[in-house]
Image 1 (cartoon, rainbow, N blue to C red):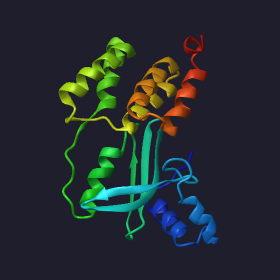
Image 2 (image 1 turned 30 degrees about the vertical axis):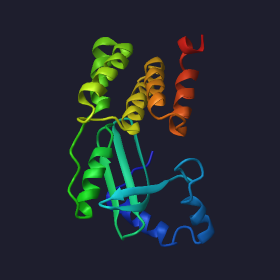
Image 3 (image 1 turned 90 degrees about the vertical axis):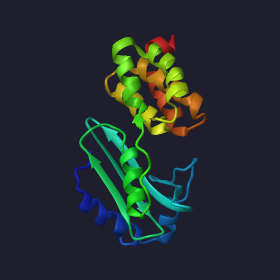
Image 4 (image 1 turned 120 degrees about the horizontal axis):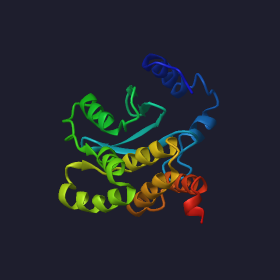
Length: 201
């Protein structure tokens, strides 16, 4: 666990990419070069469409035990966007809104997080009903909801943290049909399966 502030993380990011932390430029280059899909050595690296341009960004996000965070370094500018949130919700919607506003573009429409919708169904009627409802949801409200990979990962991770791997497994399994082959899902499916005696049988 790391205790930090936005200011500390900004200083750390600038020191890192200015070469003050890793003085061997070859090491830094390897760190920000994708190794598996869009993941380098400890940081996600990829292009994002900002306005009309595809721009290179790098960073990481995460959530655990009641907080979430996201740090993104925009290599084409002097900007770093840092989000620290005292919830375990996905920071993606906040990130994309702030990112677009930061670079002078209209913020995207806010979509309702599918993790919240499916989480409510799971609590009321079980995970299999949530999976059934997902099909109905994407057909009727596909343009209104956020069905991003992060939504499913955050929901599944929540149930892993709650020691309910059987629910997490079904969520990751559903997500894998939408985002097949994602390394982020493969490792989580294996973790949920390993901790789930019902699946192992």
